[in-house]
Length: 372
Image 1: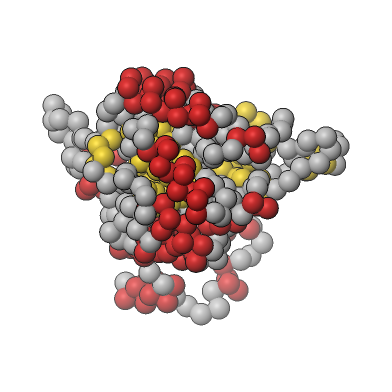
Image 2: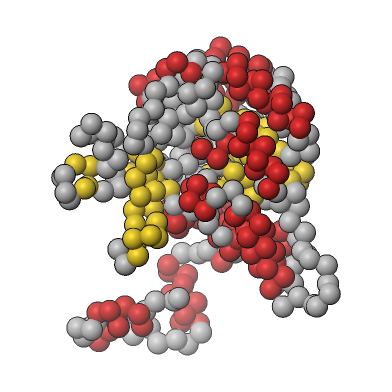
């Protein structure tokens, strides 16, 4: 534990020349849907806010109601372990967003405002949105190349981000005109988590955000026998997030961190606590984003997140997040190496162990083989 009376660990982060008071950003989605809520997040102490994704033509964006569905703990109906959404990007006029960006930066010049942008597979559209948005004074761009649902027919979101060749081309378009840092947001709905991030960095991306939501079907309502969220009796697969998504997000972040050790990463996926955030930092992230966690716990959760993250640093005697960043990465290896390490430690590795390990008390026997 830290020494009594010692200074609290610093949570400040510097990324791409930007200073964040703490590493917690509100992720793109409902927590950043207009100027009012973005400024509220800054008042409460969030280190940054990635606005809800915007495009040049809002008239093509039509959302449904309902648009969300929850996966609940079977033993506690109030506990949400997973969350699916079929929500699209912002349906507010582009001109309104430009006005609000200016107002936010005038009121909060030292808080980090990241504009999430998404466009069709047309160079002129990407160039226009970048040039017009950066004039408002936003601090950085996050390219949404990863939304798993909605508008695939327009080759937007994950339909674009799943192709490293297209990612490389589109990031190149954006970097050719952007005067501020550009982060590329990655989809987990791919076989190789590193291919598109590598393509983005090769084209000049200043950072990687990972992960966006996981394409999913959250469940079937057994009263109606219709899939959820049900809209006029029908649905479409949507983006899965929440606590249960965190192990998948951590794996993707780990792979990207090892493949691109010199590229800043903004990690997200199932972050509900400061301890969750610490795991992402330990796997190489510079900042973390919270979306579903804020939607279910409220904006004021930022105080708890900061306290819990600082407690992790203090527990290990760290003064800053830099000392935590990436500390877990060297400990990933192959299964064959794990076997060799156990042999070297003179642990019992007898053959045909399954014959004795499993005797019919499967719940107790599973516990005996579990690490935590």
